[in-house]
Length: 140
Image (tube, rainbow, N blue to C red; front, side):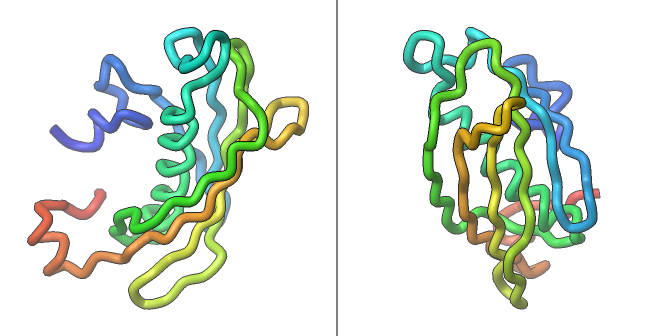
């Protein structure tokens, strides 16, 4: 199983979110519509879904830069609930790049402009050797 089965973006995962990220320079964005199957509390999107979306957006930034990374750290601030029926836009962009680390900030914003959640991620750049050790193939 490859990237097609990714929980957030994979086309072939029957339980996935099926989010399609768009590239805008070094930044990425996508839209997501919260459905009842995404809830934690009644009518409120589960925080794990919110976290997964922010993490995936953060991972797409280095991927589009030609880097293979894993999330080393993800700090999330939940600002306001995402409710069933709401559509949010996720955006992510790099803030700092070193040889071994890429810092990425992401946000989820409602179609009315309300910030729902933000994150700061540390994406660890994997060497070819480390990719092989982890059994990770570079994205094609």
